Length: 177
Image (cartoon, rainbow, N blue to C red; front, side):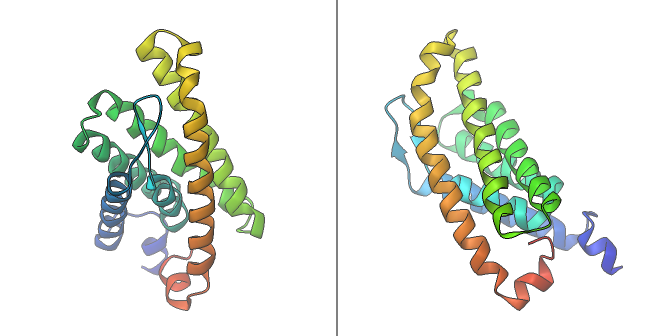
């Protein structure tokens, strides 16, 4: 039974934690919005996307990150971005979690996993904006603000993950961290 609790099996605890982190990703994305020059906005959502990865692992972290972030776009009126955000944020969480686990949770693993995830975000929105505008050159205008959001997400999620790892309760309840 203990193995099923942490192996990614669907149970009440997993469903509740995934839902809570999805809601937190949505709120973190919507609460503080810094407008970007390209019409989008920078936010704190990537912090929760990355924490979801480290706390829940690749599958459930991807569900929480993708759904929560996509809901934020939907509720904020960015409906054209909902499918892209769902996929991009889910891929971010899955990549960060897999890299973190592969590096055996070493000190640099949080940074490397976050950096890879944020590279997915920057490239993903650049490509999607290129699809929407019909021009990859024009969509490159969003890269600088996405890089700023990436840096914030990496710094905040790493600091929070390091702090959370110090808690015996968190280590017991979230052994992936």
